[in-house]
Figure 1: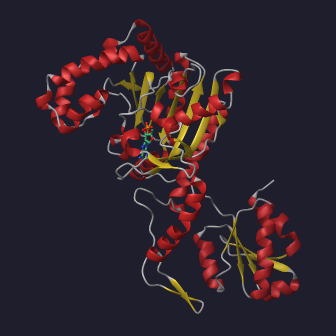
Figure 2: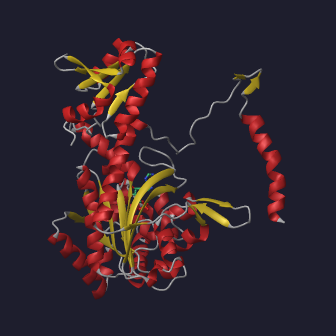
Figure 3: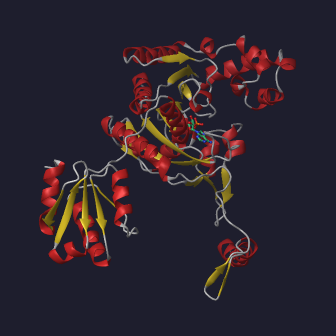
Amino acid sequence: MVVKKNAVKSKPAIKKIVSSKAKNTVVKGKVEKTAKTYSVLRGMRDILPKEERHWSKLYHVAENLAEYFQFGRIETPILEEASLFVRSVGKGTDVVDKEMYIFEDRDGTKVCLRPENTAAVMRAYISNGLWNQAQPVKLWYLGQMFRHDRPQAGRYRQFWQVGFETLGSADPAVDAELIMIAHNFYSDLGLPVTARLNSLGVPAERERYRNELVNYYRGKRSYICGDCKARLTRNPLRLLDCKNKECLEVKETAPQIIDYLGAESKNHFMKVLEYLDVLEIPYQLDHTLVRGLDYYTHTVFEFYGPEGEEGAQSALGAGGRYDLLAEQIGGKATPGCGFSLGLDRVVLAWREYMSKNNQELPKQKMEIYVAQLGEEARRVALRLVNDLRGSGIKVGFNFSKGSLKIQMELADHAQVPYVLIVGQKEVQDKTVIIRDMESGIQEVVDQKKVEALLKRKLGHS
Ligand code: AMP
């Protein structure tokens, strides 16, 4: 049996990994370091507290938008059956052909770390019977995606996306609502972005266009780069993505998809644009915007950051309509539209933009600092900190510092209006010193009355 075979196999394999890589050995209770130190895998990264404040703000903005526009949060597994993405995102796309983390599970199933989440959300909609509920169903997610991409600034192998998806409506107002929500996400951060829009119509229209494009590029074969020559057979729409100088010239006179759309598709797209005009959301029409994934129909869009920032070069977010996705993955026909925003890139572009404009995120302010002198005092101070936290007062402290001078310097640095000081005498008298940091005036207060007094002083109700 497969499971048994793997179970037997895995033991020596683990032994080998440990003995070849981790060469730290424990001798007489001490770790002896002989060789390997670990760093993060290529294309992966740690997000440290310095950046985390920006990330928290993104989560809040996304959560508030979801609540306001009534999207329910959905969590889908990171691991999915690989064919889910092969069928939906499509063969011939970079994501499927080059970038999926794909492997065989212990039972032989081909699985992958999700490279994107729209197909997984649609899978969940189908497998949980959400089509039985009132339509459309509005869902949002926040999570990590995985693509074995060439790492560079703003391009990682594990990255975060926040996404909003509306399933079960073909109305162009839904496309506009989603573009509005994505636009609000950036404007709530104070980050100016430009939306670029295009329509890919329906498959028959796209097919006609693809053929025209291929005919056109065949005639220009000697002017285009090697990559584009390969795209000509593999994925012709991606010819429009090339940033190579000669290819840009060829692209200028290439046929445009808008001329191949039928009346219904044109009408859908015009409606979306009209709604965006009503909402006063600025956009640029970009006939070269084709998106990398196969499942898109009709409206597609991308968001770019301000000139000169990280986001000006690569999209900060993207989305579109995918009316055929449900059928591609075995469900009944269900129209859908959505977007996903690349949070790693948003943080980069946003921080760069803020620093250029001398803006900073407001820091969480401490209201008081607790300083202690001596072991007994430390115990009293410890309890004080915990009691005050319970009453909603923001307390700073550092119990690994014994010197009062250093603790006062830390309090000064934190710019708190009051410091509580507990020393030997205060322990015995069951009191605390409250020092007003501006006037320097100190008062001695009964420990039991500290909380109420501080609340009054700090203006807590
Ligand atoms: P896509 O599904 O390729 O349209 O991606 C949606 C958004 O996710 C993009 O606009 C990027 O902001 C972000 N994104 C895509 N790939 C990566 C990556 N490798 N690293 C960081 N962000 C990414």
